[in-house]
Image 1 (spheres, rainbow, N blue to C red):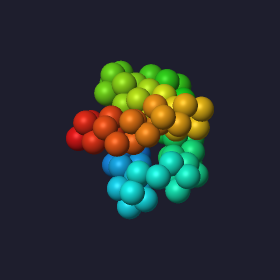
Image 2: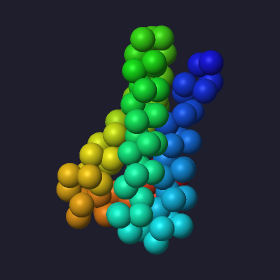
Image 3: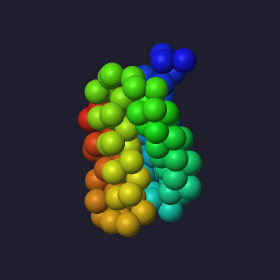
Image 4: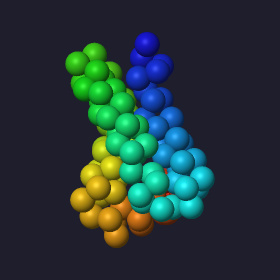
Length: 91
């Protein structure tokens, strides 16, 4: 269980990057997928805190996914930069 909890945020980043590349980095196409993936990552973060998993990798990557999802919805210009550069930089 802890293995899944630790690596789910990174899987979310890979999924967001794959969908962004497939959608040619258009925010309108990717928005619903980013919402679903960030909701799963947020739920995973809550489970991680409750289970007291001591891995800062999970906290850091989850934070990046959640902040990026907020940027995609509320600050579209910054969300565009997030999709094109931040996600790719995490590889």
